[in-house]
Image (cartoon, rainbow, N blue to C red; front, side, top):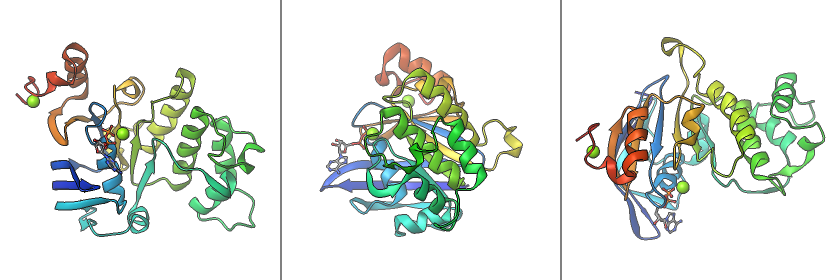
Length: 251
Ligand code: ADP
Ligand code: MG
Ligand code: MG
């Protein structure tokens, strides 16, 4: 297993948000996490990333066979975990170009490498745009495209996306999805896939463009259901998230 979450319980500001989460993702797999607003999806995302406000009160997180429950975010990123935030912070005084150099292990006085320049163009960023402060005054679509561009500089072994499809118009979703598939090795045959990921989505829109291997439904801090993404989505579209609690997938 690449990522194993065992009996995880998490407290935020003194409130128990995640109760007893068990979730395993194998090398080459992409899982999707669905669930209503407030279920705890972002809490799980930020806990895997190791944000200190998210306090693990029970259980553990194992990545590449190593217990990472007590590691810092920086240490987890170095082990190969990458993220795209739902609402990433603005970083004044740091340009997109500088951040890309940092993430692709380039020297600051070097020119941005040709691969990154090409990817920036593909994601519809002009050369001048790369000199803007990260996320400062960016539109919704620009924020998401910039998050994906940074991930393409890192090419993490495991990437988590928190609501990559929210607040983004159709053209941007298509553009982003092509690169998300690259980050998740989804354009390869399963046997050749190395990279893995977790897609968090409220309504599953992104699944029209990026295929997932397995779906989990998070409700009220617990996994209510796990199974085939297409079948689970169908249940949700018919009966809402309540349809997952006693569905045919996990009964
Ligand atoms: P989702 O991403 O599924 O919409 P969240 O993980 O953001 O859900 O939130 C789950 C619950 O945890 C909500 O009730 C939310 O108010 C609470 N919560 C999350 N983060 C914090 C925080 N930093 N402080 C207080 N409560 C929080
Ligand atoms: Mg969220
Ligand atoms: Mg069920």
